[in-house]
Each structure stands twice: as C-alpha cells, then as structure tokens.
Length: 144
Image (cartoon, rainbow, N blue to C red):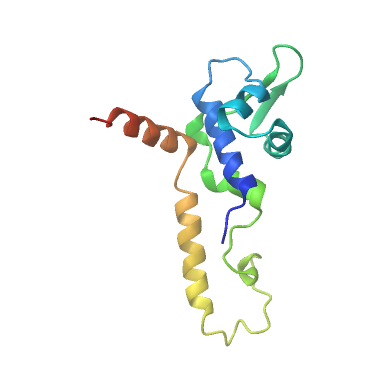
C-alpha cells in the first residue's frame, strides 16, 4: 500500500486547519502558503473533504474552511479513505467478501489478511488530536 500525495496532503490540510483554528474560517490561500502547495491542487483535496462533511466552507471575503468537529473526532484512517479509497494491501481484500477464485487455496492470503488488519488497526487508532499532541511534544522537548 502506498499513500498518494492526495492522501498525504489531505492529512496535512486537516492538521493545518485544526492547528490554526481560532473560530474563524481559514482562507485556502493561507493553507496553501503554509503547506507550500498550490491552491489549485488543494481545491481538489478540499472538495473531497468538504463533500465528506469533514469541513465547513464559507464563500466571500471572510470565507474559507474550518473543521466540522473537534480534532479528537477525526480518525486518520477515515481521512485517508476519503482520498485513497480502501487501504487494503491487495485487491482481493478490498471487498468485504473475497471474490478471488484462488482464495480457498491461496497460501499467502493469511499473510495479506494479517497485514490488512495491522494497517486498519493502526490508522484507525490515531486521531488528528493525537498528531497535534505529538507535534507539540516534539516542540516542547527540543533542547540544545
């Protein structure tokens, strides 16, 4: 499994909005500037997050984006699934029922199922708030 730039940037955008939340809407150009990404590419990502109900948008001079929930209510796995689709390491595990004609005799299937389980458990155990707290701890623990 390889996470695309769309998935990685979606996570960065969500973190940026969460970490700069002052109750006001955050302009996309401000997010793009801080993240060193183009507004055009961010528009594609924001659109996915907005359609999923993860962001609230406001048009106009004081417009922009903000989270619809608290950072501790956003699960990283869900954010990645919005942009990446299923996170299964192999195609035959993407559906709830394995439709592969070789699944009954596949000796590697248990390995892939185990990897799929580990990936899902990990990405579904971390929230935006966890990443924010981790970043704050790294800053606070820095010394010369």
